[in-house]
Structures are given as C-alpha cells and as structure tokens.
Amino acid sequence: MKLKITPVESLQGTITVPGDKSISHRAVMLGALANGKTEISNFLMGEDCLSTIKCFRAMGVDITENEGVVTVNGMGLTGLQEPKDVLDCGNSGTTTRLLLGILAGQPFFSVLTGDQSLRRRPMGRVTAPLNQMGAAFAGRQNTSLLPLAVTGGNLKAIKYKTPVASAQLKSSILLAGLFADGETMVEEPAKSRDHTERMLQRFGAQLKVDGCTTTVMGKPKLKGQKFSVPSDISSAAFFMVAAAIVPGSNVTIKGVSLNPTRNGIIEVLQKMDANISIINKQEEAGEPMGDIRIRGGTLKGTVIDGAIIPRLIDEIPVLAIAAAVAEGKTIIKDAAELRIKETDRVATTASELAKFGVDVQEQPDGMIIEGGKPMSGAVCQSHGDHRIAMAMAVAGMVASGETVVQDAEIINISFPGFDKTLKMLINN
Ligand code: S3P
Figure 1 (cartoon, helix red, strand yellow):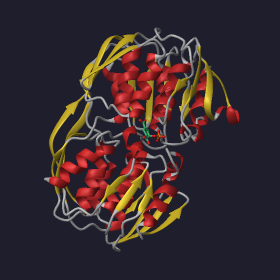
Figure 2 (cartoon, protein in one colour; figure 1 turned 90 degrees about the vertical axis):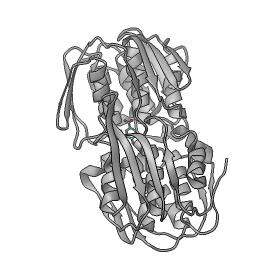
Figure 3 (tube, protein in one colour; figure 1 turned 45 degrees about the vertical axis):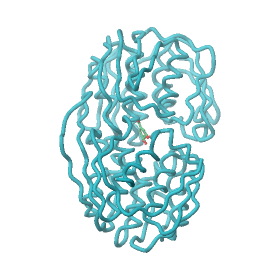
Figure 4 (cartoon, helix red, strand yellow; figure 1 turned 135 degrees about the horizontal axis):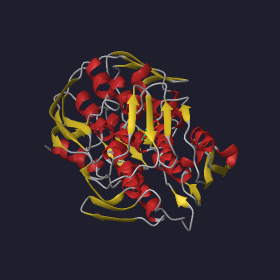
C-alpha cells in the first residue's frame, strides 16, 4: 500500500490514538500467568500485539476479543502447555524478548521465530542472563539470533546488571524471576520503561523498585485484573510533531499514557519551543495519563542525549522531522540502540530525510540535523518499519508537492487507522 501525502494547511481537532503497545503485550502475558480472568479494554489490535495473543493461544491460553475488549482466561503460573509448533513472533521484539523470559521458566520445549527484520535483531542480551538462571537455548550465532529453541524450567534467581537500558531485557529477566525461588534483581544503567513493574504489582506480585534496580519475588500468585489501556504516546508522537510543525494547528490527543519513563518527547518538544499543554490528568491501570494539547508554531533546534534517550527512543524518527523543520542545528546522540530496532533507524531516518532535501549527517550513535530549510516532497521507503513510515508521512505534511510512502501497510504493526486519524485532522 502507498500512502500519499500533500502539504496540509493546518491540523485541527480532538483525536484518540490506539492503546499502548508495551502495556497491551504485558497485559496478555500477565493475564495468561494469572489465576482467573483478565479483561483489557482499549487493547491495541496492532499486528505486534496480535502476535503475542497468537503465541499464548498456542500454549493453550483461551483469549477472546469483542469490540476492543480482550479477555484472557488465565492458566496460573504453571498452566502453560508445550506448543505443538514453532511460535511466530512476527515483527515484534517485545513479544520475543518477554516471551523468552517466560519460556525460560517452563518445563517444556519451545521454538521461537519471527520475520526477516526480527531474525536479524540481537537476542543474546536476553539468552545470556536467562542461561545463567538455568534455561538452555540453541540457535544461530551462539544463541543470539532467532530462530531459538528453548528448554526451560528449574530456574534459580540471579542478580544481573544489564549492559543497556532496555525494558525488553529487564522485563525478560523479571518475568523469568517469577518462576525462580527467591529474589531476582535487575540493575540497569539508566531507567527504561517500567510497565512490567507497574503491571506485576497490579497483578499482585511482590516487587521492590529502588532507582534503576528492581527486585521481584519468585512464585507469586497472580490474580486476573480488569483495566483499560491508556493510549500510546509513541503513536500520539506523530500527531504531536505534525501539529507542532504545521503553523496554525490546534490538536488535542485524549487519554495518552504519560508514564515518566516514556514522556521524554514532551520535554524535548517543549525545549524546542513547541506549544504543548497537558490537561485532564488521571490514572488508569496504575499508569498516569492525560490529554495532550499541541498548537503549531516555530521550533528551534536542540540537543537530545543522555538519560532522556531511553524515555523517547521510539520517538527519535519523528523527532528528526521536528528537527528538520526547526531553526538551527539538532544533535541526537547516545542513541546507538536505534540501530538495532525494526530497522537501523539511524540509517533509515537519515537516508529518507535526505530525500526531502534535509541536511542530515549520520553519526555512529545518532545524527546531526541542520533544520529550517524548505523541504520538497519525496518518494520514501518504509523499509518495513512502521515508525519510519509514519515519520515520513509527517514530513510529507510540510514538504512541497507530493510525498509517497511506499509499503505503508507496515503501519498496522502499531497504529491501525493512522491514515483515517490523519484525514480527520485535515478535514476539520
Ligand atoms: C519496548 C522497549 C523498547 C522499545 C520497544 C518496546 C517494550 O525496546 O524500543 O519499542 O515494550 O519493552 P528496548 O527494550 O530494546 O529498548
């Protein structure tokens, strides 16, 4: 599918974006391991979360969906069954890495694989600690690439210092820790998103969080829950940036997750002089949320680096569009992790932005963008990466002439209905 974008006069209106991807995955996983029923509304019906549902169904979990409400009939901590076939995680790194943690604790054999992109992504960061806990893996390049075979069970608790601030890695170890006796401790170099911790607590696990160190007590009795998933700030990000860079825009995005480990984009856009305010602050599913209102204006370049990076890692492609429009230079650094996402997002963001005539220099751990020059429409590739496709659609809104985003169906990974939401804001 091709997405065609022409310059927009302004974006106006109030929208909602789909449920948070990270929270939706975790809700299914903990729901499956809990006793009793878990009812999740505003669940993200994107392809990544559907991959998680498919994998858990293959392990005997009854999961149903009715009008956006997903019901998981929990099997208890020891109820999963050996899957009869290879578990396909599709494009989803979160499904794979968190599931590896859970499979490490199962007294059965399983095999995981994924699509071409996922089969290139590093899994050794997860198999190393899980192996220390007692799980056995077989796979290419010393168990660092999918497909991976797992023989789990009989885990022992460990204390582990992660080499990178990765929520998928931290969560994988914490989930494996549920199946070990005693306390499993994970320390990370900077704080990554904490949805696993919040949700484990909600489901009744015993957890201690002290700065960047999290400790979980093994063998809890988890209890099914009922909650609604806040909307995903990583999906809202595309419309936040679009509204901020199109003069005269006035957009409100309702019920967005404002988890402090995820809201770095708000701070950066404010530093760039964007006009953003938060209203109607509430809490749902143990997560802070609120409405985000953005008005169009003039942005200035900035530096994005250090501890804020894990708090906005998925938003960097679209922040690069804000930087291209902003007056002056923007430097993005300390973001080498971007190179091992669904695509090498340093390379794909830089190469696609260059097609619009943007002055962008790729760096080993980020990029330097000289903003403020007029952009001209381009024919862009999604590279099979949902966030690259949507970021380029945002660029098309401020570039002269027509922009075409090729292979745009990949957007369904995280944001089904992206084009409809965009049309609503244009036609208001
Ligand atoms: C995620 C963690 C992040 C993020 C990804 C979702 C999660 O990945 O980029 O989109 O749900 O835990 P890393 O753990 O690799 O940083």
